[in-house]
Length: 100
Image (cartoon, rainbow, N blue to C red; front, side, top):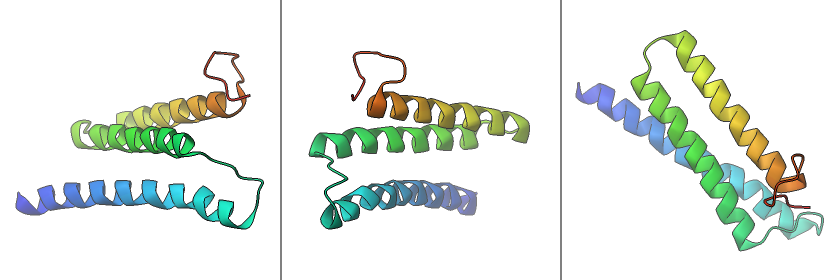
């Protein structure tokens, strides 16, 4: 049983590591160009979105046993992430959260 728990915790570490790696992309890009201009708030919001998505997917992977339902739920979670991300970036729905 200990091996299974260690694998779950290892997966959680990988998820958080991936969040950091993804956030490093705009940070590094900002060092070389003025085209990317993120504030600390932008990094915090994206970090929360990515970490929340990763944790929700981890929750699905830990609790849902059937592969079909895992894939459907993870797909829905990722789709929601992209919709929120696009809304914050350019405002496709015109909500008050729109970035443009």
